[in-house]
Picture 1 (cartoon, rainbow, N blue to C red):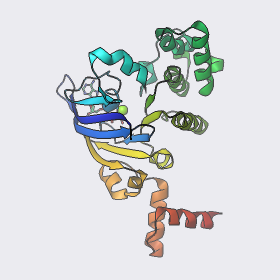
Picture 2 (cartoon, rainbow, N blue to C red):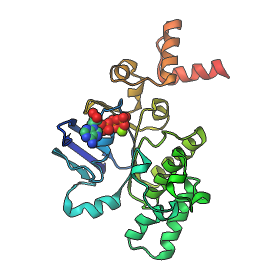
Picture 3 (cartoon, rainbow, N blue to C red):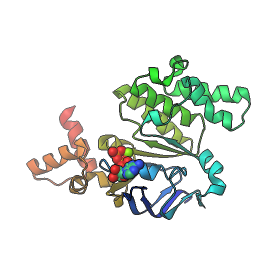
Length: 270
Ligand SMILES: Nc1ncnc2c1ncn2[C@@H]1O[C@H](COP(=O)(O)OP(=O)(O)OP(=O)(O)O)[C@@H](O)[C@H]1O
Ligand SMILES: [Mg+2]
């Protein structure tokens, strides 16, 4: 099993003394659809900013494809790890969306045609090609989110990290981004997403890490999302499906697995 990311005893203290991460360790195997969950202030964004070297650990280390992130390999790390920021205003800076998305590929010193192909593909993938001449500040928040995602897609990184990509997207936008994330995974890329949306996580994730107060409080497959008590103890709301099944169980007095419950629900509803 090849590992995409290894986080070893990572702690991070902000300059004001705030300890945002406290001994975080977990591994992300290559190609796994990984979700980082946690309430506001849990440390999700702080953690993700370490994955492409934007934050330097106060203690511990982060490895990408087996190599510890450091000054000497930063260029290679940034090529391998594309990060979509939580706030698109932190990411978009060029006079137009087109220029913004082209900026990364231009820095890779690709041929002009290759740059144009990448920009067009990325903007079309997020349905933003028509708006390519707009300045970022003339876009809605959801459109900015899409443009920021396009900027990372155009770099074609092996590891794609997205900090709350679904926030501010309408249902169709969420479906489109989910389809893009699935396609990336099918191409063999490792996709890591932070979110509060446990319904989406239940549908999408292979591997789940729950953070709270800068620590990993649980990790495992998405069966973990059926543990309502654990989720609620850590400031999260269990997926609606899980709540529904538990209510059934309580009312019908029959314990059942998620699969059984799904079948029962289907029979009841359809
Ligand atoms: N620049 C900063 N200086 C000091 N403390 C910070 C800074 N940025 C974040 N923090 C603190 O670090 C902790 C983790 O914040 P972080 O933004 O990583 O959480 P998060 O899980 O991404 O939250 P959210 O769900 O709100 O995005 C919080 O206590 C936050 O107040
Ligand atoms: Mg955050």
